[in-house]
Length: 183
Image (cartoon, rainbow, N blue to C red):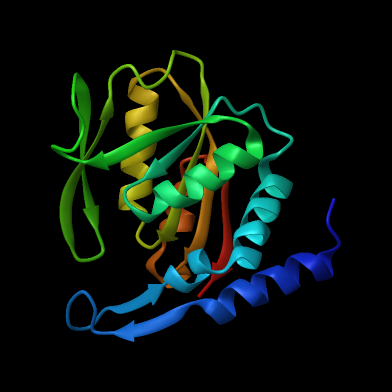
């Protein structure tokens, strides 16, 4: 188990790399850009260590990444946990048989999908994404996994915007949520 000061130092390091962009993608939105976090190999290692510390004691069969930046974190965690990665994508991006889930996001609505044969009934899935805002995308991802008979082991998020209530929403549904940086 990591010392508390290591966890705090890692969190501070990651937070210092995140850049803010006002009015993106539309007026009134403050966009938290994690692109610099992905460019920095030290932060990449910190992300892997941090989430392994939080979820490494759980039985996890796959890491599910939510399009698009969640794919990067899911791949990193897949390597760290020695597990395969499942992609949860925007509608129309996956071939073959898929299942779909409508959801609301902080500035609109969308549809997510995953391939019908992505997992087996009873598989335990850790869901990874870059940002947790209202929780709409994360909740849709969980519904897709559960529709196929999987169990959500938790959510690994780089950034959480706590004022938008996504973490509280997911926790009220019984999910474990771990966000490295919270605003």
